[in-house]
Length: 296
Image (cartoon, rainbow, N blue to C red):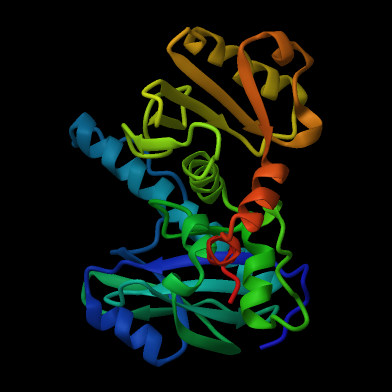
């Protein structure tokens, strides 16, 4: 499947109550959103005979419907590429292409449930997320359908790696993978390496991405960012100052050109993510970095 690189990229998950309906969508090469009863055409008016909770639920239902229908309409009108998950497949996905001006077709699947479907002009899969961990990390959580603005490079690479090679650079790493990369650098640091992590990388404290202990026994704290906004970088750096103590070592990992000038006398150690990437390749971690990006 070949696509223009500027194609809109979408994501849809078919988490239907009925696995039969999802399987039929997969079999017929369509994508769909499903709702109960009739599709609401406008926000529901307050029902005087209903309870406040019932009115809130009706409005919530309508908003959920619109949130999924809006990108479906845009994809049908403009065409584009969509990453697709079908229940009950686990850890697998398809990639499909929708041509411009594809009509949305309603389809009843039971007395009270119906679908709005779009036909796929082309589709590949199933593919495994384990082969493309970056794409897995970029999936929008808790949404039926939405745009995937950050997924263009990895999706184009999956579809045509010769035409759209994925750059083997630090900017190709998802923030979650960036945190793992910096944790690996700390573990392999020849000068007092991190012996273990106290809490899981990226899920420690509000300010801290890594909390561990070095071989010398001192605490290791680190903040990691891709951030390009200089003021936001300074803000994040300022939050680290509370951790600067005699028995702590505090690291700030960020873009080379964004090192705050105030950092030099702060007690916080700065390491550019570009240098971390290069040094890990020199330490024999090139294969690990390629897998983090999703390269073969």
